[in-house]
Amino acid sequence: MPITRRETPLSQEPTGRQADMTFESLAERLRDGPLRTLLTLHVRTGVVTPVAAIDDLERIERLAELAQIARLAAAQLDDLTLEIQSVIDHLAAANGKLQ
Image 1: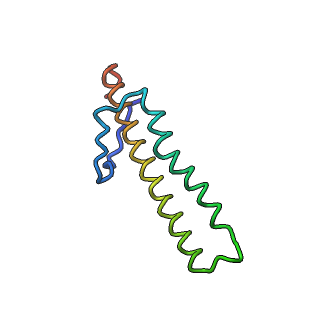
Image 2: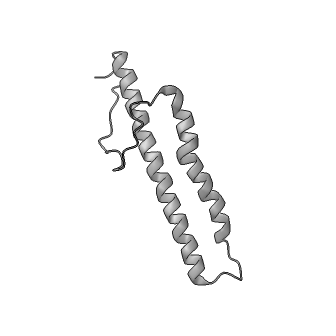
Image 3: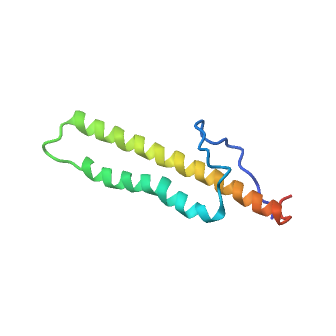
């Protein structure tokens, strides 16, 4: 089964990490990037629950913050996924498996 590469470009902001991406660093990068952001999203979601003292404007602001955090987590996960695919492609090519 041939290994395919996604044609989606990395985010516009350079991460400066592609050169130092290693197999061993993937779990650490996942934990410290998108998973940490998703944890922040999870925690911040608790403050949006209905409370009598919160007015509609404040609730909208909190929801907007959640949307921003969710977009960041998705972008981080997408970037890391592309980098993981790059490592897979490199390892497969080094082993003569890429066609």
